[in-house]
Structure formats: C-alpha cells, structure tokens
Image (cartoon, rainbow, N blue to C red; front, side, top):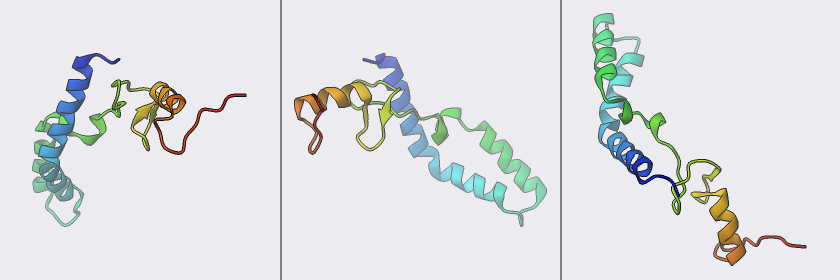
Length: 101
C-alpha cells in the first residue's frame, strides 16, 4: 500500500491539471504560433512559467486503483502487477486465469 500522502498529492495534481488545462493550452498556442509578435510570445512564456508546476499533465503519476502502487502499472486495467496476479488467481478479472501446471 502506497503512502496516503503520495496518493493525495497525485489526486491534487489531477485536479490542478483539469482546472488549468484550458489556460495552459491557450498560452501554448500563443507560444507555438509563429504569427504572433515576439514580445507577445515572451509574455505568454513568462505567464506559462509562473503557473503552478503541478498543473502540467506530465507531473501526474499512474497509480494502481486498489493499492496506490506506482510501479508495475498496467494502463488497460489500471492495476499494478501484484493486484493483477492476485485478482486473476481469484477469478475476479473476466477472461483471465492464472496458469498453473
């Protein structure tokens, strides 16, 4: 089980990304547009740099839905490898069985 503070921090990042996504996209489009003037682009770059770091989507960490573990994560199932194995052994995941011979 991951620390509760790590899970909460990641949830806070997800919330910030959702709140600030439109503003970040607007600033990035201004920066990326070659037709805007250089001072305007510089101003947009400064405003983007002043935004909270945690509002960037790359700061979000994929975590297991059950345990909060961040490593060995399967995107399709939103589970870590440990929970995937355990739930497959119990027959809780449709169409998946743990092989044994």
